[in-house]
Amino acid sequence: DALAKRQTGGDEINELSQKVKRVKADNESKNGGGQTEESPENVLSGFQTSAVLSDSARDKSIFLHGQLAGQEAVMILEKTPIREDSLAELLSGSKLNLEMRNDIYSTYRLQPPPHLNEIKTTVVCPATEKHVKKYQRQESFLVEERGDDYQSITLPYIQEQRFSVQWVYNILEKKAEADRIVYEDPDQTVGFVLLPDFKWDQKQVDDLYLIAISHQRGIKSLRDLTSEHIPLLQNIFQKGKEAILQRYNMPFSKLRVYLHYQPSYYHLHVHFTKLGYEAPGCSVERAHLLTDVIQNLQSDPQYYKTRTLHFPLRADDGLLSRFKDAGRL
Ligand code: GTA
Image 1 (cartoon, rainbow, N blue to C red):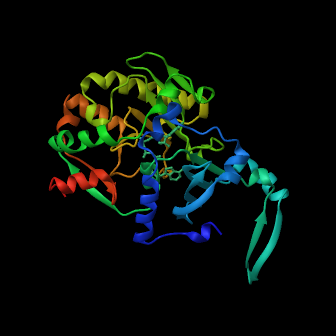
Image 2 (cartoon, rainbow, N blue to C red):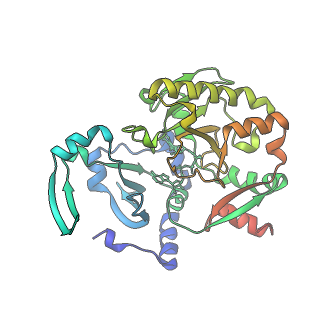
Image 3 (tube, rainbow, N blue to C red):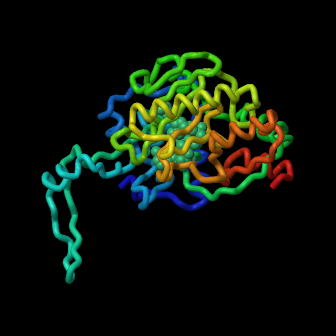
């Protein structure tokens, strides 16, 4: 029923935005990040869907906006990939119902045992208006940002509007996800923590996705990098790929290692994904290969301070309005 209330029209999206505006701006920073301590059962029974933000038949996922224990929340449901190591059990332990048969062709509905039929579920609660927008399907526009645009438009905007990075500090300080750390170099200048990205359920390496989070604070994004950060970037690259080879038996030749510009979280981090896995955000307009970044800084220490960078912004992103207001779009 809740899903039937799906809203797609502009008016309804505006209505939704108004509703979400009620969420206090400080929601994110509450309680070191504000995660509600709901038990898994309460999360399911307590989540009241108000809108479907987006869905994808191809990715077999749905992004929901709703309320959980009186707070705004986003829930992401994704069917997980079929694992090769569970195939034998899947074929022997499932029920198969014939749907249709025609000549040499037939289709069936297979009903696997519950443990082979999991749905990866991600909850953001309390969710801010920015979270709701982030997961809402929207048209995107490519922005051209010169070095001076960064200073006059982007930097002031991200200083006002960025997502909290409390979850990042929780990882660096071992207050969260400590048991998930794959590798750590504790050096405060060139060190980092490597751990599974929360989009990866770690059940299969086909969609391998880890992030390396720099111990050094204050590097917001690509734009802050200069040649002084080359040792940090090289360290993340070298030790990150060695740790992934050791833990997952995945050689560097099978990895895509990159930074996002713009990122969602303005604390330096590097994405390690499996080559061939189309991770969200790995397209050319957003991903910058770490090897290219290092080489660019080697050839020009101020490369990212001066270059024009292009990136996509969603239709209702406040930063897009700032670019429009400045006559840059
Ligand atoms: N281990 O608490 C966390 C955590 N958080 C809050 C974020 N990440 C975390 N990892 C751990 N613990 O890869 C991860 C994110 C992301 C990285 C931050 O940190 O998963 P970024 O700063 O460059 O931000 O990276 P980015 O790229 O916007 O992040 P994200 O979430 O990947 O979003 C990109 C787009 O992908 C989104 O706009 C959305 O449309 C889509 N997307 C997000 N999540 C999913 C999903 N689960 N399935 C499908 N699509 C998704």
